[in-house]
Amino acid sequence: MTTSRAGKPRRFSADDLQAFIERAFRAAGVPDDDARTVAELMTRLDLMGADGHGVFRLPHYIRRIRAGGINLHPDIRTVRETDATALVDGDNGVGHLVVSRAARIAMDKAEKCGVAWVGTRNSNHAGAASIYAVMPLERAMIGLYVAVGSANHLPPWGGVDMLLSTNPIAVAIPALEEPPIVLDMATTVAAYGKVKTAAQRGETMPEGWMIDRQGKPLTDPKRADEGFLLPIGGYKGYGLSLIFGLLAGTLNGAALGSTVVDFNKDDTTTTNTGQFIVALDIKAFADLDTFKRDVDRVIREMRSSDRLPDVESIRVPGEGSHATFQERSRSGIPIPDSLLDTLNALAGELAVPVLSE
Image 1 (tube, rainbow, N blue to C red):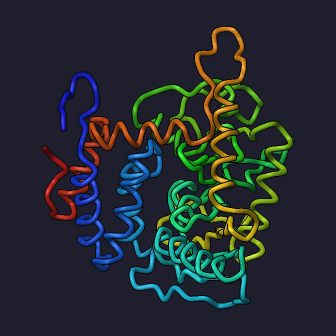
Image 2: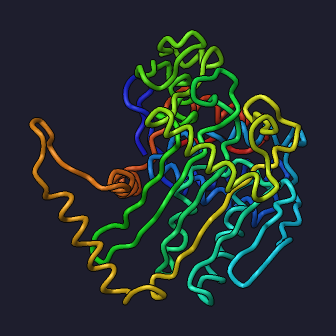
Image 3: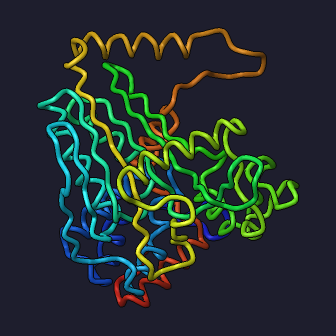
């Protein structure tokens, strides 16, 4: 761990950060095993560089728990089921617990059927999508995950009423010698978590992330409420957000459109967040090693293809987060001073040891 209040952010080991998150959840009333599970997933997101979804979210989660907006003892259960599908009711539990349960069910079913689709309802915000898409990799499967965002920041194309969210998708595909391909993207140009982290760090946003209600660029993240996010690819991104919302929300009996609760502002109302995860057993379609070897070949072809002038390298999805994971595993997870102050103030409120060296 290194320290520097005037310069670079301080760094903390994954073990120290996970322990801090775990004791905060325990102090807020989360059962020990559940606190450990959520802390592990959140820390992994920070290791991967998903800074808007890791420990950054802890104060908000704790605030919602203390306000009674999350059920600390949920009965997470399967309410509909076939051999290859399931619908999981999260009973308003912590989203990470609900989705990780759904992922395990999907993998178990895919081992028998070759592919499985598991949806969720009555869930909550569960962090970045990739953390769940990569779970099936443990069993040599492809993972696909989609969620309804936990607050609406996107209007229908051409409108100003915010009826849709970032509605992200993540896909993880294993390789043989190369790191897996992991696509994790919102249907908006930027995820709202990036807006929140930019605001906390005192940074401005690039033009193209948001516009105001007159259609002018909005670059001050502290004025985010005055505008809305822009979809990727114009009307195509709007279409993807809508379709993903119908599949992850409406199909599961979860919220979409005007029924989505803004969990950033409302700490007490049940969000009824919806997600789905698909696990696909590669062995149902191809020889596993042959497939992985072919993925290696494709990755290397992408990297070695001719580049435009001034382009230093070509990467594939997930390459950056893999490198970040390795670097942060060695050197620690950077925590900006503003976030560290917030976390340690939270520790004081919960009467637990602060995150320190």
